Image (cartoon, rainbow over all chains, first blue to last red; front, side, top):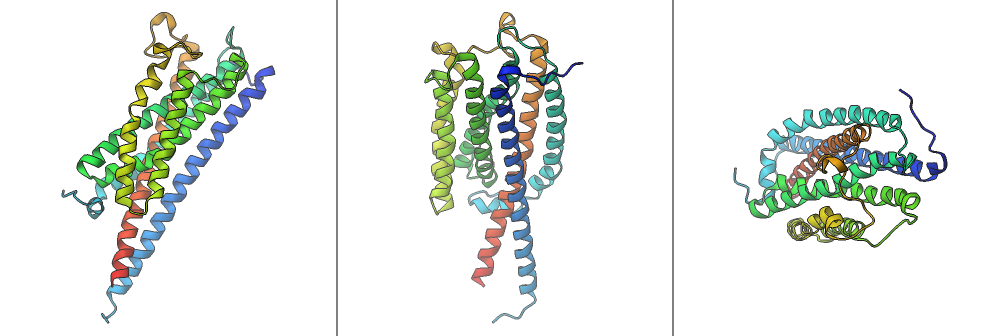
Length: 59
Length: 245
């Protein structure tokens, strides 16, 4: 099967459309994973703090 | 489960978290496979006799447009459930899908503009389809702005949910605008179109694969973002507990 990447005079419209789509997906993936990672770590940090505090005598 | 308070769900989030832990990467993998297959068929498809090479833009523009409407429908349903049942997971689902929906709508507008210039001779026309999609984009932005503008998260969630429900009115306008008004856009030519208007298989397959790839990618990212919101709410509840000590 022949793959045609030559868009001729339409390349100036076609490739930016594909490029912007790739960038949009890259942002959605990056932002979603970064948010998940951030809040998972924050929760783990707080859970460790609560656990550590549970052993301390109350003031 | 008593779901009178949004934080109640977070006392027992294990079921959702256990499901999304394997479902999110699974949908992501499906999206990658379908996307690669769809891109292969995109560039293997022959030039159209009228649209020439720009026909390939259909395989990224139409799926983005389909997702922009579908995600808004999910946003409306989740908002309705959050308003009626005050279910924290429904609220998180609404909050998580809004930024993704805004991006897909922006993609539909930008790729449509890039496709419109060589085909219609204009980047933009205030016709019913394009204008109603722009309104859809503004509803997404309004939802996101409301959620971040109010300090009280519950008030912000309620106000944004009401706005999301109001915006549902726009969905049939987007969908049927090409039938109700005379627009530059052609009518539907995909799965639900009349056989004489339907795309030939050589264009229908890459469109279908790319649409399913976009849908799977959204499913994966939606779950990841809901997980992040669940962790965020749990972290905030814990931080509050620590501060009260």
